[in-house]
Image 1 (cartoon, rainbow, N blue to C red):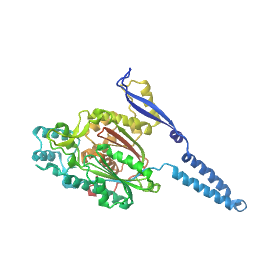
Image 2 (cartoon, one colour):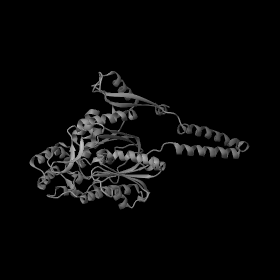
Image 3 (tube, rainbow, N blue to C red):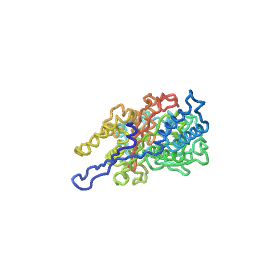
Length: 488
């Protein structure tokens, strides 16, 4: 009963932005929105089913079956009950299931240590002494280990990265991830009706999604989408798009491929604002198979519960915090603003403020509401998000960013373990990072039935996106995993 009441009466904290005037100028302003749902047919159908089931039970009491049974009436009742069940299943919202996912692990010959990175950067002749020293310090403080993967072509002296280099890297990581996914799910390529590929920097003609279609000979009427320029947050955007498409085309499969092509993010100049991505980004890709078919629930690993997207592009500082641009020598690279940590903090706060009422227990919501109403605005109450999720997969960008998020959300080391281990082992693989983190949890058999997993991604724009999954069963150690040494 309490759950039903929660569904009919729900609260949402709405972030109204900064107050421009008055006694609270410069402070965040919030309002509380209360929604009351109206019970429609999907809510009332179970009641009708129970009533009609009772009536049929009365018709078929064994002791006096013969004298009381009216075959025509019984047939009518059974048909009506079947019709109600059909309409109920047809009108009730379909869940979105994550059948399975796979993360690509590059070959061992592409492994690179921090010392080797600096040596190759020196030999390339593309950086001056100050740029080399900056990258050395950045690597030392990045949280990245000595077994991440990089294409060696970026270090070749005198070599200018070509479209061929980008296509070859994209094909290697995308097809590697999809091959593992198809092998794990036993899904035939022709059964895939929706394809979404996201890659921030490399955008080719034909598109990367067309490369996947051509390689796997997908069906001619596939609904194909290619998301570009959306940064590290694009993976969750792809999930949101797939969810909507599965509602429009129920009962089919959606394939999502999330990657970033490192050779195209590489910067070969000496502008300090553009050198940081060199030190953080590494090779990686993930492929996910989603379904809205109810019969796939038994074989799926997770069910999508909540998805919240936040975009701060209306603010100029946020919009310019991460940009692809050229330096004075016309070398292309990603420019990272010094305001990034502050800008990212505002975006994350706005996102979790919207997410909180959807996932937090009522007691935490009450504490948060009362704090907003009665306490000082310069010391806001931080909800205990550990009560909302059993696991967190926070985009593995850098040690500094993870430290700030852990401090501000008061998360324990256990909640941060997957993110820190992924950053150390695979580096920042952009939009696929949160999937390497979930793969880490699976490889260590941490996921139990009913566990809620929070994936948090953020990137250029500036965007911050959250998705919450619920485990449909105990997830054992997978046969294929980037964390299992013999999976290559």
